[in-house]
Image 1 (cartoon, rainbow, N blue to C red):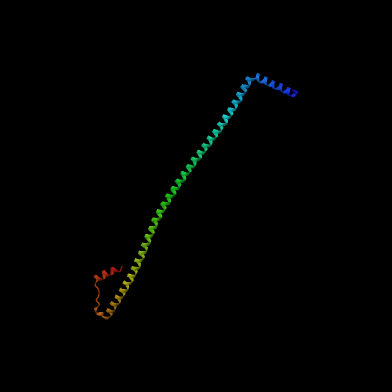
Image 2: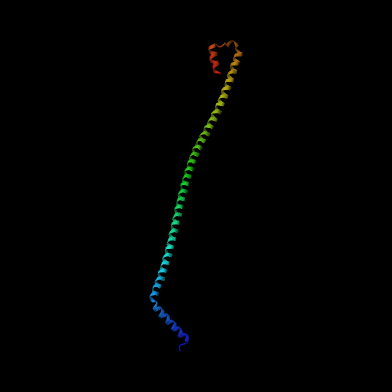
Amino acid sequence: MLSFGALFATIKSARWAVWLYENRAWLKWAAVGIAFAAMTGLWRWERHDRTAAQETAEAAIVRLDLARQDVARWRQASDLRDAAITELRAVLDQQSVAVERWRLSSERADAAARNAAETDRRNRAAADVRIQELMEEVRARPEAVRPLGPLVLNRVDGLFD
């Protein structure tokens, strides 16, 4: 036996079935509209995601290009620095060679000056010895000393200026 609630539910469901049958054209268009709205929403969502992905990719490409430009600038600066270091090393090597040459020249000049001083000292000593010998000879034989003529005196006088 059917209870009153079951009977009521059966009638209610029958009314719904009748109402759906009567409004079936309108419900078809409503379903099409809901499907169209869902598809449009999905399309816009996908388009938004695609656009965001493209913008992210473009930003990454711009950052990559900037990084490549930075790398190029750093390499150029590094090359310029290396060239400057090489040039400075060449100048330093030239200066080192010049300093070594000057040091050797200075050592040779010092040696030549010492030799000249030694030679001058020996020559003065020899001249002093010769002068002493001549003075002793003059004291021993004053009659052998003769006066010098003007020709000899003029020539000898110019030697000591």
